[in-house]
Image 1 (cartoon, rainbow, N blue to C red):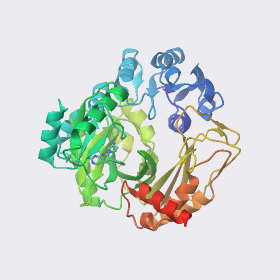
Image 2 (image 1 turned 30 degrees about the vertical axis):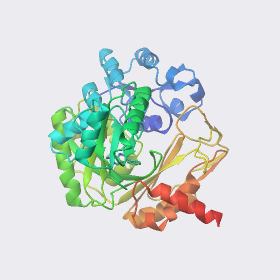
Image 3 (image 1 turned 120 degrees about the vertical axis):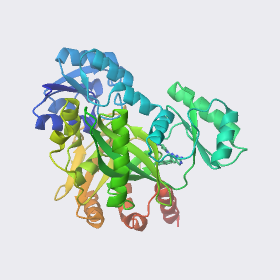
Image 4 (image 1 turned 90 degrees about the vertical axis):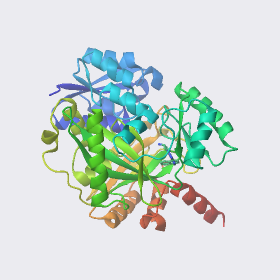
Length: 454
Ligand code: MV4
């Protein structure tokens, strides 16, 4: 087993990884920027190394700095958390070259899933349902028109190197296509250094449903069921839950089975998330795969009792799936997570500064993952996520009422937060009835604006 792990991240996820290491009796090394000198991840790690100035490119994203810290501290492995270097195949290769275990899938698998049209082809070949669309990247605008006619409008043009919603264009008819194709291509080239595009049939009002998987180094892959993540705003998830009201034990088992077979064939190791869109007829269509631990992983932990971060570490160390899981995967109850962001309630701009008061809720079935504390400072350089509030109930109704009361009892002063917005979502009749899709927040914000104007 590893003796010492470097945590190449900050904030709540760095703390989450430190928690897992402590329970496994593994020493931890934190890295921190000058803006994070007083952060809890630096405080709770066994060692902490300052790696540079606040800017991400000069600290947490600076591969030579991260690797130097790992060499100096003499660690066996690096856990990248989410974001930052987590899906950087080059970083994983550098770790390997330095004989440091990267806690994640092999670099070639990360690279495959990072090229979205290749991931699509690999899934299709193995029998995972995908949307009708282009085969491989589109060479020219004329080819895009051919595929669009074949698939039928509306279609969506996506960047091969994209994901998370950047560089996408919805095309409703033939007239729009040339302009939108050019725009998507130059946006992709500018933001990813790669202008490659592919095309899919556009799904109206989809739900976003994703499957959590774990793989060991010996070809065993398991599914831990789904998370429903349709409550998003501008591609930032606000609330996630498990199970989805739209899945049954049968449909969950069926999709889980094809995923495990497919990912085992690909050589998938460690934690991963397979994203689907569910159309209005309830059919699932693969869109992309994330090769990291995700922000919303606690939702799955709450309903399965599997510690996903401990599992990641054990699997990376070469443990077998059956040793890691210690029994069958059982789904119990319902979990909901609210991502509490430090942001302005109307403008949605980040709200940095000192937290003057902080009282997180507690009680039965309540979990908080956070690195925030009273008198702590939220630096302006990073993500606006300050806390994740997760609850579990015996069923969805109990989880919803538990979340509502927990949000009522959550005090954060000194910075603006999304807590008031989350309270409103939890009170919404459509949300309570499970009538949600990816357009929910837009509709919700429009109607609440109209109401407050009258
Ligand atoms: C789509 C889609 C409709 N049809 N693909 C946005 C993020 C990226 N991961 C994929 N996205 C979408 N892909 C097809 N063929 C609609 C979206 C989409 C979306 C997806 C999930 C959650 C929120 C979303 C918000 C807007 C658009």
